Amino acid sequence: MITVESVTKTYGSLVAVDDVSFKIAAGEIVGFVGPNGAGKSTMLKMLSTYLYPSSGTIAVAGFDAVTESLEVRRRIGYLAGDTPLYQDMRVDEFLRFIGRARGLRGADLDRAFDQTVDLCGVGVVLAMRIDQCSTGFRQRVGLASALIHDPPILLLDEPTHGFDPLQVIAFRELLQKLRPGRAILFSTHITADVEAISDRVLIIHLGRLLGDGRVDELATAAGLPGDSLEATFAHLVRASASPSLDRSHA
Amino acid sequence: MPEPKTPKVQRSDSSTGRPAVVAGFASGIWVVVKREMGAYFDSPIAYIYASVFLVLSSTTFMNSFFLDSIVDMSAYFDLLPFLLIPFVPAMTMRTWAEEHAQHTFELLMTLPLRSLQVVLGKYAAALLFYLLILAGTTPIVIMLVWLGSPDLGLIFSSYLGALFLGAFFLSFGLFLSGLTHNQIVAFVLATLMGFAFVVSGHEKVVAVLDGLSPGWQLGTWLFESLSVMPHYESFTRGVLGLGSALYFLLMIGFFVWMNEVTLRRNRF
Image (cartoon, rainbow over all chains, first blue to last red; front, side):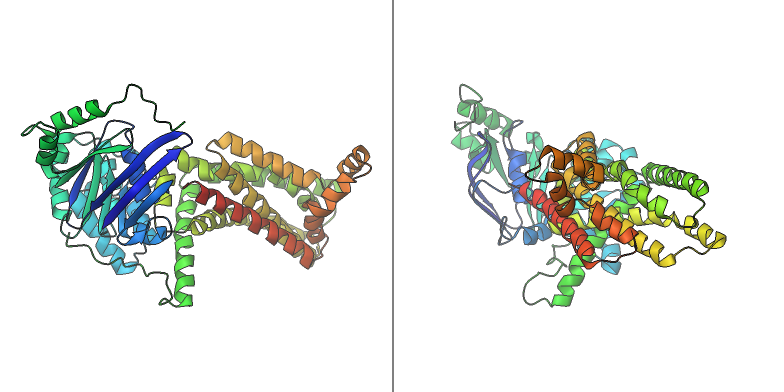
């Protein structure tokens, strides 16, 4: 469903993503882990077609993310970091706006709206303006907006940000429910989320992919068999850290 | 939620008929128009803009109307370009800057809409809002008809000129708003551009510029090729010239297209 080949993204002399390749199949939940500024959000922005790669290729559902970006956008559900929402809209207005922008009309829109509201548990805030919702509810509304068109591919940037522990559990259950037939990639700082629900982990640091595999495979490869993802992650990041944080090609 | 289905939106390939593609394109624009109109009227901004514009334009007109005692709207339409210089940028400055401030630009640009649909949607909403405000001046026409026999053809032609003028100001206001994340910068740039397009049509400015560049006749060149005033004034004189309409349509098309190019460049 997702194929990333030798993708690099530069901003001037800064290399945000450096020669990254990976694949995600339908039915897989993949966690994307890395420290702040590692390149997770940039990678997700490229998968969502918000940004184009400087080099390399990205195919999503068989469509090229640059030359067929519209087709890609039709097939993804994307929750960007910071959960961008129109704060002046009511929750129901916002979700219907997203549904219409995604081509849903009439009974299809009503059905998708009801189903997504139930799934994400935002029924109690439907009549509220988004800027009056709590952080947790805003996050759920963002998630609902990514799901309303029933996309085969889900890209979620820090989806549990602002969730309380119960909401985190509910989110994990939701992803399991959504798993059949979908490719799901989510970024997070919370390694426990990844261990709990991911089939596979991508570890990124300074724009480079340090690991791609199951948690136990990565731990064994790092010489830490049986250790937690947190320990493996810390080991890989420290081992790869260059003497300076300079990521320029200059 | 069951397994995902094939997207309900049609692919825009050769298997899709042209009418369906056009309808889909227009439908995408309409989604953005509705969102933008909601944003205008859900906040006090729209009501404040409309009130300030109508009070300012009407009171200034009424003053000259009572002094000159002539039953026409020439004074109103002579004043309009100068009112639009700050008014339209005040409307358009938030259009893109607000999307960046709320981080919703990313949301908008990852929806399955073409950049042109988003730009046209925002432009059409701003134009509709402007039309509504312009429609708020119709009591003046009713008053003139009640008081005497104004030249209704001239008034119609002048309103058409006002429509083109506002549409033109909106096009570059939106474009300049797309160049910056700062609303104040967008306002200042659009005001300066509007000022340049208007004053380059003033005879004294033309004379001064010609005097400064006797060889090039800069003032005359600007007046004839770029200034909005000769084209606007042809409508307010009652001349529905094809050349003037073309000038407006080409300028509007150029700035809308530039706005769309700016959006596409953001992806790189």
